[in-house]
Amino acid sequence: MGQIAGRLGWDQETVMPAGATPQRAEEHGAMANILHARRIDPRVGEWLAQAEAIDEVAKANLRHIRRNFERTAKVPAKLATALAKTTSLAHGVWARARADEDVAAFLPILQEVVDLRKEEAAAVAGNADPYDALLDDYEAGATGAQLAAMFDALRPRLVALRAAILEQPAPAQLNQIFDEAGQLALSHKLALAFGYDVQNGRIDQAVHPFSSGSGLDVRITTRTSAHDPFGCFYSTVHEVGHAAYEQGIDAQHLLTPLGRGVSMGVHESQSRIYENQLGRSRAFTGWLYGQMRDMFGDFGIADEDAFFATVNRVSDGFIRTEADEVQYNLHVLLRFDLERALIAGDLAVGDLEAAWNDRFAADFGFAVDRPSNGVLQDVHWSEGLFGYFPTYSLGNVYAGCLHEALRKAVPDLDSGLAKGDTSQATGWLRDNLQKYGGLRTPVETITHAAGGPPSEGPLLAYLEDKFGAIYGL
Image (tube, rainbow, N blue to C red; front, top):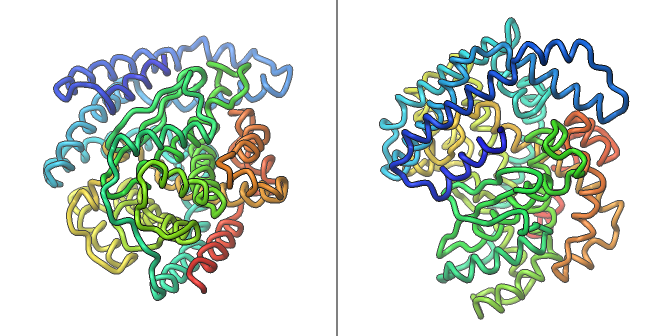
């Protein structure tokens, strides 16, 4: 039933008629009500009290079932239904407000979403931090304080690296029209190159690219821009990373609690390592350069080295999903701090746009020009996903650890990437992380695959080495 509810969401993001929003909200509400009733059925509690784990898989399944039961039981059915209906409506309001550059049109329903999520957080948290209760939905065991400490360690070196890079001459950028059909054809080829199983998936277009589903039905979306084919290509590779995780989980876990990615941070580690450490590597971009020339002809970049620099060009920009590796986490930390303040009651919804614009100017050195480039750019808050944003940066940290271990395990990795063959990397990730699904906790999952506990050190070293070489630092 959860899978069915997920496909309702996929449909709403891709092909649902715009006028169907009110009816879809009722459908989401009905599904949420039924699912909530099943999840808190008293018999589940009785079964948990009697159940005994006979092996590692059973023990992990019970851990997930117990956590889900105990958490869901704290949330009244009326509140769960109201959240599903309101966030479904809010998504449509956000999409219209974003298109119209009208923040005021979105704020009233955002206030409703924030109030409902705060009510949920209070019910779940008890005397603990309400934001931690929301974060736990996406990264079990993590706390806002832990992540803040990690992010505080990231921020100074990222800011310093950004400043040093922007003092150097910038690589060339693309400066021509790239037709949509060519972009979609090459993005499909990229999806296959990174191991996406299209027999159990599909690629569609959406305003905000995403991956949906698990097991035998895992779907992704991408988007195109006439002047920026990289947005299409790397959105596709990013979402394939998510999809590959779901498709790579051992079939014995299908439709069980272990049959999904264990957390959003671990999920993001897969999408980011596919997109960045593999997809933006010197070896792989050499192959991509040839593919783009075959598809679009001469597009003004002289050779593979210049193309590698162009792909990894660091430049000012507003959009998180289009940000380079150096600046991406700064976009996430902005959102993390603002949403923590919203949930804590330290920031009013009515002051959110001003707070966003002030923080953006302080972090990036220039002003937001319009709401779709600022507070309205992301879909997450309309869907009530408070606690989700920090998992993006946590995923980058995890990806740094995994990449370090992958390079040690597969020293000749670049030879395959240079031919467009990612199988050594994707096979290692599948065997060491993806196939286990939710068997281990998030931290245990990364520790098992990377050979040590997660730390921001490998990510920072990778970024400083890579961009130091590109920019001659």
